[in-house]
Amino acid sequence: MSGKFANQVAVVTGASTGIGFAIAQGLIAEGAKRVYITGRSAATLEAAVAKLGDRAVAVISDVARQADLDKLKAIIEARNDQLNSVFANAGICEKNPLGETTEAAYFNMFDINVKGVFFTVQTLMPLLKNGASIVLTASICSSNGMEGLSLYNASKAAVRSFARTWANELKGRKIRANVLSPGFTRTPLMDNGLKMSESDIVALRQHVEQITPLGYMAQPEEIASSALFLASADAKYVNGVELMVDGGLSQI
Image (cartoon, rainbow, N blue to C red; front, side):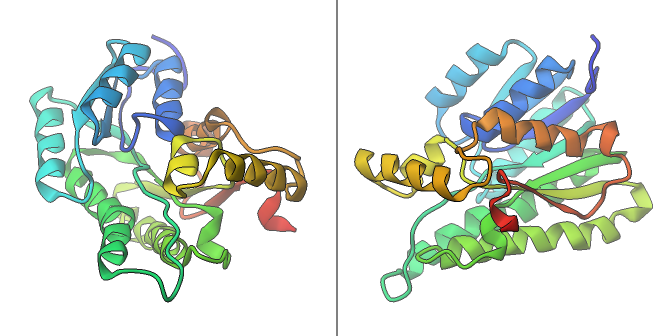
């Protein structure tokens, strides 16, 4: 196999659909030997593997559950695989306006988006090769104040903070940790997580087209290509950064 990830092994969490699936697809296209993909729906994972082929390994896993992360680690160990890269991509996006948010919604957001990222990386740390790459999916919302999304925004700011600390903490093993912060992207998470009607989705897309310098909402593949760059040898001196992939929206 040839390509930028030839004979490498990777884990992509939240890879049934959307950006995670596109990352897995890109890894395989660039020669990865094996890509472990995780998700909570067996049916959706099965459909993803059918598209990705036999170099993809599906693991039903909820990143908020340590037992599931331990199972993922055991499956990788059973194949005697060591990891070249981990893409901690799984997350949720929900509107939680101040004054209307339940305690359960608070814990659900932080259990998945913050705890899930932290313990995914911690659990898989022993399997990471020296010189490996960690790519964390955050959002441009990590540094803005979009209304109704205070929990989501804060959770993604925490993810961004992880990369700064880990870039320093893992320096002895030459492991890089970077953050991918997408802008508005056409994914099931965008449509379903915000629980919008079809007309509201259309209105949002039109609004994004108007306010984004490049004039359109990203496709998952356009975000995934930047994640793959961060994990590749092309970015071997890139460490601890947040890469905004948003058509210029966060810069204006």
